Length: 264
Ligand SMILES: NC(=O)C1=CN([C@@H]2O[C@H](COP(=O)(O)OP(=O)(O)OC[C@H]3O[C@@H](n4cnc5c(N)ncnc54)[C@H](OP(=O)(O)O)[C@@H]3O)[C@@H](O)[C@H]2O)C=CC1
Ligand SMILES: O=C(O)C1=N[C@H](C(=O)O)C[C@H](O)C1
Image (cartoon, rainbow, N blue to C red; front, side, top):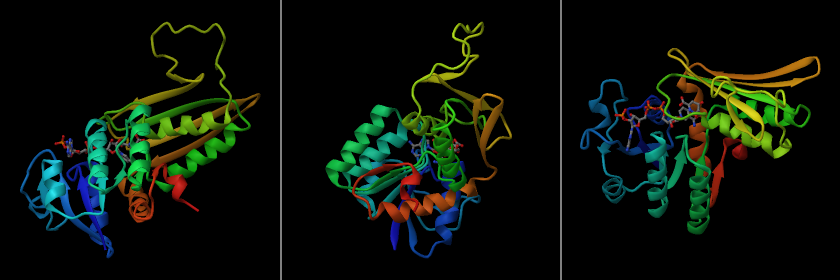
């Protein structure tokens, strides 16, 4: 039995994670970390599963009060980072879905995990289709140098570009040489019109009510375009990946960034 704490239990992803955990015979929810409602039980909330697990609003109090194997963090960039560091200090293995960490923060957490020989999984996207979309994009980038990433999310999202878009760009960078795309003399008459720039490739972030999580990676060459597209229509799409990450993190002693590293 793996004992799990969920941070962000009332959120769109956190509540879905509670529903997933409730269905698993080998996972036990032992506590929740929120910044509100300390002392409440999960079952006190009508919209959450009928589970006996206490809400804590202080991470140290929480970690001192309960024995846990894994912290699943689905909060905000600011707190996700603090939670991940604190979990490592307590020897609790973090599974992090929270996006928006800087490269420096990711490096610091990587070094800390190695130093403590404690497993961490940070996955910018837990949906298996999205992981495949990123891998296909990396493959295509070997043959198509010009690429633009268009990510579309709900308008409650805090970070831009999305973690998935940033990870996709990183995977493409692994195989693509720096190239400034578009006309060499192009000028933006409205700032930002051409999107964010990574080594000359562009990322465009759309935020609209009604969207969940969607991305297109569009490659261009002479007389042809290749579009690789993924849509998450429901947050259930992320839960197979969350369970996979919980199972794997128990066997790891380093930080793994990206679910593709856990797939056969
Ligand atoms: N890796 C993946 O596959 C996916 C990752 N994400 C990422 O997961 C994160 C959460 O997304 P989502 O569920 O949509 O966001 P929500 O805003 O719906 O949920 C975040 C929750 O965290 C709570 N929270 C805020 N601060 C704290 C804190 N200090 N301690 C504990 N809880 C806190 C919020 O409470 P309150 O509302 O009261 O402030 C809220 O309930 C984001 O970073 C998002 O990008 C999302 C989908 C998929
Ligand atoms: O905030 C979201 O919703 C999502 N965040 C992740 C990201 O930033 O890529 C994963 C998915 O796109 C949904």
